[in-house]
Length: 397
Image 1 (cartoon, rainbow, N blue to C red):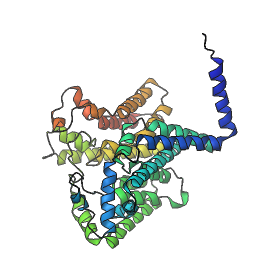
Image 2: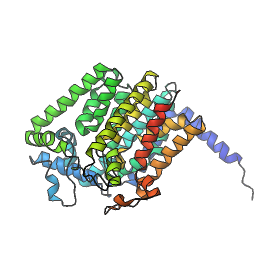
Image 3: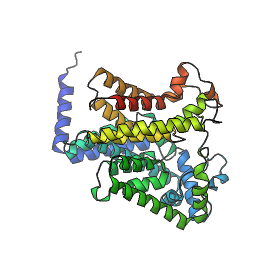
Image 4: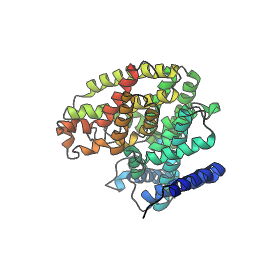
């Protein structure tokens, strides 16, 4: 029996006509399907490790207990590592049941992923209609589920996608009257977004930098008012302990510090080398960022700053690299030469497969990598450095 190619073509054309005639309905159906997919992949019955850490801190706060020792009641939990202000925002998690809390985290991450997709699409195609941007954003969000950092953020119930969403909203100018506010809030939650305050200074957006700094200080004050003892310990002790989030030598730490510590056989005595590498990254990185911004490459300047941030942080778990989604979209949009297509492919394969996990890990096996394992075990860092160097050497947009 011969299968006619006409029917699929007609069905595809019919689908396109439906979307063109009913864009809001088509987008609503697509969004609902995407949310359902995320909840099906990470259902409320699935344990979300970091969500449990957040809940423990939230319940401790609601009961007037210490948020930084709440994990002692559950020996398998790591300690809460965020500033006190973040615990205030997470307090509602302490009021929800286990299943409802997991569902809320997954839904918030899914919505954040949709926002990231739409913000990226708008930045890449500013002339497109709102419906086209939202459709492209939905497609990007769905594609994002193929990237390991995105999958791990859902898997652990982390807040990385939420932070990236609010940062893109602010940095790409979607709230022009409140520029800098969300950057300050994000910095108050997790410190590392503070790299974007430096970005604002480098790109001469001084008013926004002042706003972001003021909001960050306000989050600190709120933390001190709500939990004075915990705030004093966090800002006076915990913030200076780079090992508090976990061992820097784990393969999941793809920051420069992790690479240096693994290659050195451990973290002992590596701080000077890490500082030199971090300073060099800051200098070369922000010179490149400034040049990209001056050329009108706003999204590129933002993503280069994100790369600087994850590289110089003492700890950058693989799940922290969610900026890879807009980066892949940007790279493929500009893949007009073999070299650029190669960079896009390298980035997509690296973060899609999650190459670090192909190297031996756990039980200090990260300290004994050799040959190709050295590349695999440090591949996120290598990829980011390659992209940063490529941007620094590029002569045209």
